[in-house]
Length: 256
Image (cartoon, rainbow, N blue to C red):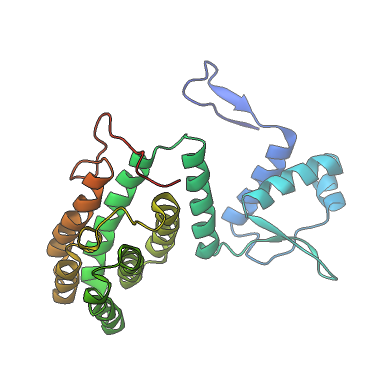
């Protein structure tokens, strides 16, 4: 089985290993609908006969799919390898861990992470304004009513801000947006810690403007208010007001 090589590779194709071919064949069955979430796969021995390979080769391919959460292993009478449920909650956890590890090993820079978050939050604000429900608006109002209560407490202000962003994502009624938001919030919490270095007025700046725009169904207004809100923290952490990294920006203030 062949697949396109990376652009830096001088050879136009690379050859998949036997375990990779097994994994690719199973993924193809899932994509074509022959295997559905919860379905039990044949035993390793049966798959070995089917693919014409050894059980260790099959096991290696299956473990690759388990690592990607495409398959899960179940114990007991009906145990074995089953197709995963592809829950977006699993995606949230996976994305969060992947980004966190990438930041630690420095294959992803903090300013690059915040660039993506900046764009995602603008999308959240605009979409929420178009799709908000009475229940979503009520949740945003509850957050608005707490803003004055946390005015002198940086940590509580930071937590309220994250609560606001999650509620805004929920207002979009898009499960993928909500899952990505959850992952970004978890990573941000790890990066900034308790946000003691940021004044509550900076953390919560323009939140009421965003809520007002969402109430009015004003997508462009919500997007603009979100841009102003994020610009405060973006500049504080070494980004430009548009969320783009500034050359030579320092991240020494960000907690690991």
